[in-house]
Length: 314
Image (tube, rainbow, N blue to C red; front, side, top):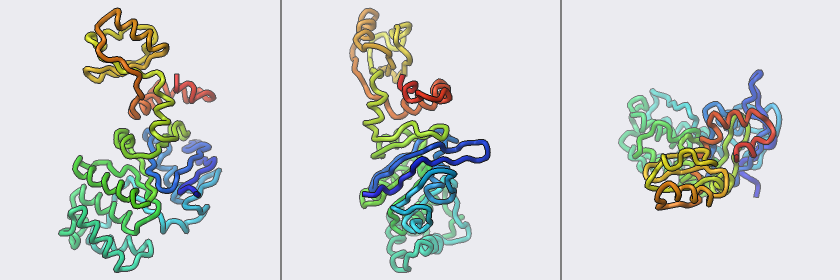
């Protein structure tokens, strides 16, 4: 099956700055695909090229089986990171307008609008101007505007930004339901826990280059060979000055340890120092992997050029 999105050797520069370099990814149809990366890494530039807002300098982009055309855009819904609604429009008029832009008839638009407003508990606000809405309400209305036409591909740039926990959960459930109904969903996020819990596949871009691409299990397998989780009477102090211990993440009663060497050597050293209650090989969290790549040491490794992946895995 043709992927929902395919980028092949895509590069985009702005003057002397290379925002995206030789990027190749495939987003399977029906996937819930996460874009992660630090600010300025190239996420939004990549999204804008997928939407044909920007054109790549090199490479090829296919969206829903089409290349180099806006024809697929009626089948795509996009929620930008920069939020904004027409303040003087009522919610009804605004949503009807966005539905018409996607070629949706009035009856179908009303049916979808009423269903979404009821789901988000906004029915009583349908004839209010959007300037009267709270921030959370505005974000939900803009989300409805994005999905009202039942797009095949939904692209959400930081959809959870600024939401309180209740509204975040409402929106998260809506995204999962849309995906379950057959829509391909791409969303960018800084929340590694959300990405870890929701996404079928994850893609990480750093300084314009792809550094991760795969399922969470595949990514964790790449980075999990040196990660151990321990609980001892000595806590963090018991791990000090042990050869091979590269990093300790203190989680309270448990410590997550990056160890270069045979795990049995670490266990032996700990047993000589303190009582050990728990010791296991563990897969690192997506948050830990993100920090490894985007942290200061990883930045230096990435700038070194060839052998980047091997350097990051050390």
